[in-house]
Image 1 (cartoon, rainbow, N blue to C red):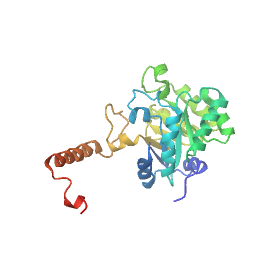
Image 2: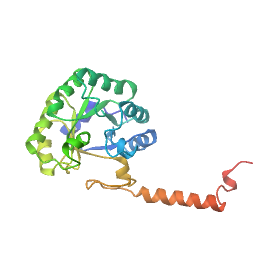
Image 3: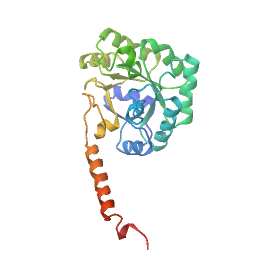
Image 4: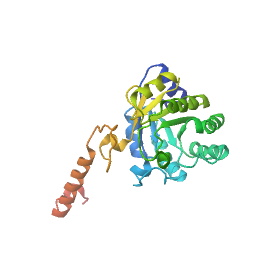
Amino acid sequence: MPRITVPEFTGFKAARRKIAMVTAYDFPQARLVDAAGIEGILVGDSMSMVVQGHDNTLPVTLDEMIYHAEMVGRAVEHALVIVDMPFPSFHLGTHRAIENAGRILKETRCQAVKLEGGVEQAGTIAALVSAGIPVMAHCGLRPQSVHTLGGYKVQRDERELLADAKAAEKAGAFAIVLECIPRAIAKRITETVNIPTIGIGAGADCDGQVLVLHDLLGITTGYVPRFVKPYADLKTEVTRAVTKYRDEVRSGAFPAKEHGYD
């Protein structure tokens, strides 16, 4: 299958084709997800929590994002790959934002960046797009603003959310993630803008959905958000397999003769 391009991804909305996106943080994850025919892969700053064990997304650095994005980009042959711009890499003025986003595209095989914000980031989005850098916007719950928002809460200000989405589209964003907003508001935004909306905790009326791979596979440790649907229980399977391995090593059953060389 040929690589999905940004214009093709945006065109899925007009074609009424639902978009499935998943996060991936390394080569084997991305290889498996891509082989499943996913349209979009996000190298998310959620790795700060999922992979690195932090309490929020703020600690992950640009260099760390590029390191993981390079592994993902090397694995993918079909999906559109988008990389989160970590805090505060796009808050330092438009020239620094272009420099930082440019590094992501130059040092990985990824095709676009994602940044949080709507109205207040419209200028940055426009500057990146004018520099030839495709941008996916992110409205609603913005994890990088967790301290300002007072926690991970559903965002319900319809006027503000609609303004953010419209501003992102006008600035040139090719798609928008809508996180943790009421379904009715997400539906109205989706019907208002001409670019795809990708929901996460925003209901079924968005043009697509995104989930963290670890949540999808049931290997998340700790709190699992309400909007997550596990499609497997790999946490139990992994624990069972490692426990069996441990027991066989202790008993001498592993390695058996067929696992060695004469």
